Image (cartoon, rainbow, N blue to C red):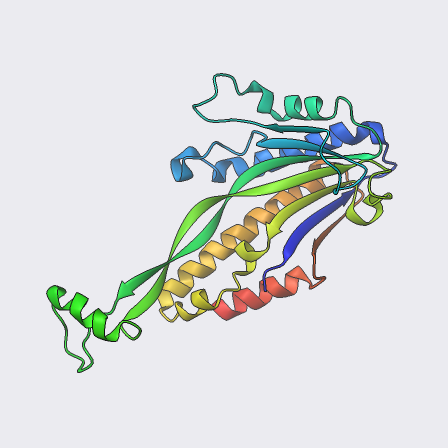
Length: 258
């Protein structure tokens, strides 16, 4: 079952006034690690070095935002300088109070399978069938004559990076971290999909699936380790909403592919 994945960060002797600087540092690491994987050549999307959106929440997440901005980072925009990390953080935190949280959306590219139906090429008798026979045969034996092959593509995914004021949501930072990164569902790293499992009988398909999932995992770990090395944190926690250990899920997934 898919699970929400988070990375919580705590800083030593943290002061609220230092939150914009800390956020800028984390956003920079995200851009540095992920920009090579988010080229327009692969998906047509802008690189991950720019902020996609910024939102400020007062009191808790049930309240309406006091600030919200969406950035256009493609050819439709004449000037994209406002979405530069330093500029976006400065604008969103200009009137930030200690009972607020600020959220920045950025994007990276992750490998994702696209399951494509491929017609079988044999009749029930086992003989090869001609191209013109395929359509008629599928009409009679559609369920038995189709298999699923995963075609892997790099697809943009949104990551939300939140900074918490000390009074936001009853001091929720103690549990969530001074900064929390929301990666969304853990599907790109564990791929718990029955259809995908059923399509991996072919050895080459299994090898490709293993490679793509490992590449997603490597990107996740590269960002986590880069934050640990460059952002001056005192502790970090990579966790899932259900509480199930992510490491065990990753190992289990790779073992199923081996």
